[in-house]
Amino acid sequence: MSSLGVVYKRELNSYFSTPLAYIFIVIFLMLTGLFTFYLGRFYERGQADLLPFFNFHPWLYLFLVPAIAMRLWAEDRNNGTIEILMTLPLSLTDLVLGKFLAAWSFVGIALALTFPLWISVNYLGAPDNGVIFASYIGSWLMAGGFLAIGSCMSALTKNQVIAFILAVVVCFLFVVSGSSMVLDGFNGWAPAIIVDAIASFSFLTHFNAISKGVIDLRDVCYFLALIASWLMATAIVVDLKKAD
Amino acid sequence: MIEIEKLTKRFSSKIAVDDVSFRVVPGEVLGFLGPNGAGKSTTMKMITGFLAPTSGQIKIFNQDIAKHAIAAKRLIGYLPEGAPSYGDMTVLHYLQFIGQVRGYRGKELQQRVSEMIQTINIADVAHQKIDTLSKGYKRRVGLAQAMLHDPKVLILDEPTDGLDPNQKQQVRTLIKDLSKDKIVIISTHILEEVSAVCSRALIIARGKIVADGRPSELEAMSRYCHAITLELEGGSSDQSGHARQILAALPCVTDVEVDETNANAMTLIAVEGENIVAPVMECIQQHSWPIRDFHVERGRLDEVFRRITQEVA
Image (tube, rainbow over all chains, first blue to last red):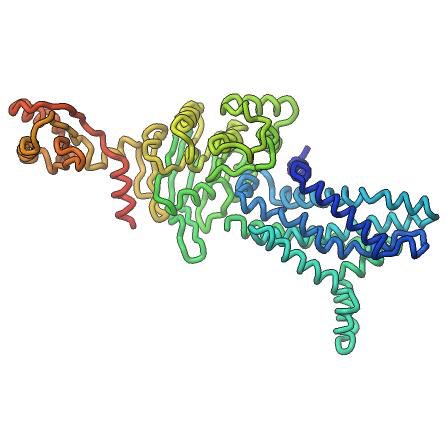
């Protein structure tokens, strides 16, 4: 097992050593159910797909993922364990990636536990399973984007509550930049290229594209590049702020 | 060997460590002394690679901590101030994690961890979460973490802070028992600890080294070096006042201090470098004063510490 593996394992285990993981998973499953069946009118629509389920994911992640990400660095900085981590023979990459991958896996586990919905919809009709699979991948990639932002915000402060609020705000900007609410504000006067650029920064634009069933390399690259840049920013911030 | 050259650390406008150079060779137990905020912890954080110096160089057995950080960090065991650890892990899991990071696997890992648990005497809490432990146990878990890989360099920031006298003694014995080819650097506020465990002491004030030497050499800098503390039997305060005047008049005595709580007790300060035992004894015998207590002081480290650090301030 590499150093990265050791860090990853400790971080992933740490979620399950407190009630945090179980509370998160229960709330995540309850909310996805609520959104799908109540707000999404899963039955009333009479269509065999999971669109009402996936449509709410960006909004659900907006609050739930920062709740997972807020402790990533703020906790270590607050109780001093950052000093242990950074004086062990570990590289900054091991730490940043290990923590991120553990959190991403954890969100993946929560997401995977929504499988009864997938089974139900197959039982009720004949959905396009390819589209559903693509949507799951898209949703998980998007969660990674939210997490990478949250990781960077967590590195900025010792206070988990501040980390949470900062992450929600930044994530919100990345979500709404593709919504008609924001784009309409630019449509009248800004050139089309700027409007497109703003839209292309949005989680929604890329997630919606993937959840139509086409895993376009550009959309995947968008999320991976976003994750990579925010993780690099995390590494820089951790290095700058570790001793504060 | 640890070589530190012209080490400086500046935090925005404040200088925490100011052009500090020293070397530590294997077998030395170096004590860092200094008032709070003198730069002890900052220096330790730079030696362990946690903080990057503003300027200067640190080499751990020829590995530059800035250039070969991982290789240098492998040689070091470090207990940060306050002994932080992961409270939601059990002692066993925490030490296993540290062991894995240090490169132990499988049987070797189990063996190393259980040995350490025995050495540090924490077997009875091995399966408890660290959060539930008392301060003394937490500190010992931190020590176990630092010593797990039998490092060549051990850096302990206030290792006995918050321990009861028995636990302090235990930790000191542990440090003394470390094999003789290691470098140990400890920081402390407790001066008796320096005399008890350190082979060399550095006094730091305002980011600079203001004294460097064996604890006995530092004690010798005290005005109480070779001083005699004595107490006369019973008697009226007139009688001991009279004795005090006679003793103070001896040419080898520069000053006499009276114990505020006991008028019969006094400390005779020697003229620098002189042995005053013989003339004082003679004087006492001449007047046949009854003596209850008589001892020669080696010097008081706390007095040296106060004098040196306040001169700088």
